[in-house]
Image (tube, rainbow, N blue to C red; front, top):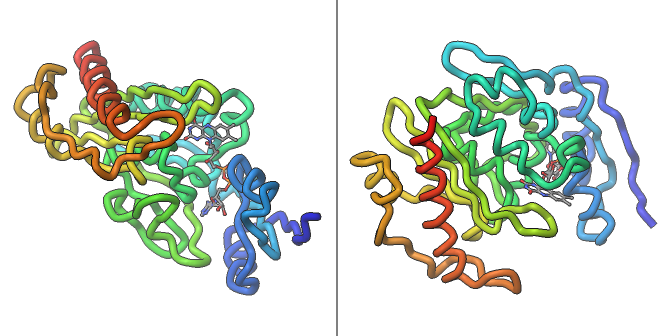
Amino acid sequence: MYQFNYVKAKSLAEAGRLLAKHSEAKLVAGGMTLIPTLKQRLAHPSHLVDVAQLSELQGIKAKGGKVEIGAATRHHQVATSAVVKKAIPALAHLASVIGDPQVRNRGTIGGSLANNDPAADYPAAALGLGATIVTTQREIAADAFFQGMFATALKDGEIVVRVVFPVPKRAAYSKFAHPASGYAMTGVFVAQTGDGVRVAVTGAGPGVFRWKEAEAALAKSAKPAALEGLALDASGFNSDIHADAEYRANLVRVMAKRAVAKLGRK
Ligand SMILES: Cc1cc2nc3c(=O)[nH]c(=O)nc-3n(C[C@H](O)[C@H](O)[C@H](O)COP(=O)(O)OP(=O)(O)OC[C@H]3O[C@@H](n4cnc5c(N)ncnc54)[C@H](O)[C@@H]3O)c2cc1C
C-alpha cells in the first residue's frame, strides 16, 4: 500500500517549509511522472506536497522581449496561450505535441523540467532558447540546469517558480514521437537568437544536449543543406528496444533538417 501524507500547500513558503521539515517529502504538481513512479514503488516519499494550485506558480506573460511561464502551468495552457503563440510559436507547438490530451491537461512545465526525462520535450525548448529557470533560491541558466539523465542543478528543497524564455528571432521544433507514449525518440529545437543559432537535442542521448557543430554550420547558412555530413558523435546515444544509437543519430539529422526547414517557412 502507499503510505504517505498528502498536503496541499497553501503558499510557496509553506511548501518550502514542508520540504525543509520532512527530508523524505516530495513535491507533486501534475503527478504525470510521480504517480507512475509511486505505483511502481520506485519512490517512497513520506509526504506529497501538492503545489499545482499555488498562485505564485501560475501565469504566462510577455515582458521586455521575454516570455515568463509559471512552473505549475499545464502543457495545454502553454499550447493554447495567445501570448506564447504570438511570441514563440515553436514553444506552443512543442507543448501541443507532448503526450496525449490527458497528459497535457495535468502535466506542468515545472514538473517536466525538474524531472528532466531524457526523452522529454520541454528541456529541448529551455536549452534551445537559452531559458532561465527561476527557483525559490536563485536563477539558473538552462545551460547549467540540465545535468544528464533525470539530473538537474536543483538542490534539495529548491522549487521551480517560473521559466523565463527570451523571444528568439525565429525558432522551430521537430520531433519523432514514440507512437505509444508520445515521448521524443528524438526531438530537435532550433532557435535563431541575437547571439547566434542554438540547437538542442532531446531523446537521443542520456540527457538533452546542444549540437554545437550544427549551431556553427547554421550560423553560416540557416538551411537544411548546412547539416549535410556534419559530425555527430553517437557513441553515448541511447540504444534500446525502440531504436539503437545509430538510428537515433540518423533521426537527429533528419529532425534537425526538418526544424531548419520550418524556420525558413516563417
Ligand atoms: C503517458 C504519458 C506520456 C507522456 N508523454 C510525454 C511526452 O511526449 N513528452 C514529454 O515531455 N513528457 C511526456 N510525459 C511526461 C509529462 O509531460 C509530465 O507532465 C512531466 O514529465 C512531469 O510534470 P508533472 O507536472 O506531471 O510533474 P510531477 O509528476 O508532479 O513531478 C515530477 C517531478 O518533478 C518534481 N516537481 C514538480 N513540480 C516541481 C517544481 N515546481 N519545482 C521542483 N520540482 C518539482 C516532483 O517532485 C517530481 O520529482 C508523459 C507522461 C505520461 C504519463
